[in-house]
Length: 372
Image (cartoon, rainbow, N blue to C red; front, side, top):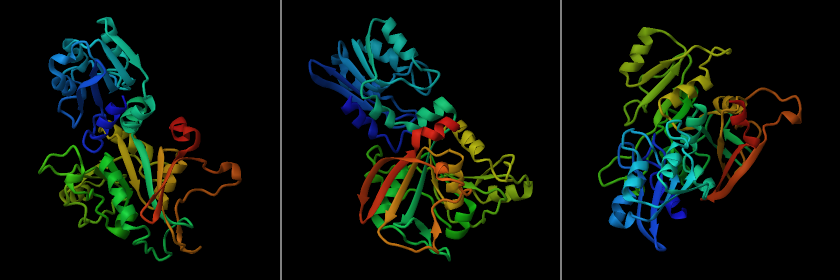
């Protein structure tokens, strides 16, 4: 199963909106076939492993990171392919959270006399697809908030200057986060201040699933813009990939202008504060098969996402310098009356990226999932 997980990881940047899946066929203590899902519409991992094994698949054990599908989607069901190939045992890392599959694939194979084992290396298998898992279970994408700060927690000087807080190595690492994401979300204030590209700038040769000449997949760029202040000459608009502007303004002329400039517009009723309802936007993105959302924004949007418990993971890059008390902070949300109101975090990982530190954390006790 560990090998199947390694194979699935090769599709980390290309399978969206499908889950990342790896499969290994073993017989007599040897691997006889293996495969991994590369992109939606292409063969699933099980079928590729079966093709690689050929006649040796009969009587083999199949190790699959995700329960084999049992319905006709873009490709035929993998359960039937495994049964036709004659495998005698199927070992599954995790059950498929997709209601069309959940448990049915396992039942189909058991009913055909195949031995089925589940929950093997479930943690690593589940970690492959946090967005697909959450979207299928809760109708929401997995949300990461990425922030860069000085060691004293400052993101910009008082005058707004912020380039560059972190090193080239840390900024390159962010592009790997972007590459695995389905969408990148920011606020219009960030766009007005920095005019960012919000695209993936990695060489295609670095991504294992891409063949020669294939472009890097660009996540959907999402701009939170309640009053539709998007500059029509924004740098991101003509770039490869799509841009979605989420607004509360129902002005056909302004919407038409933004659309003509190259962006799609989504209009929603305002929340209590007269702004785009962030949770409603995330639900809409999930309906569009968006699995993982990366928020790259200032303290207002980052703070709102944390305060509403919509964040699954924080990724914080800390640079080894100090910017002082007048510089801008990481999060902006309502004042706390007592220490008990603090937002508690659980540290997941801490490592050095160049001269900087990268810290990964989640809201303690899965607060975001409990309250969504």
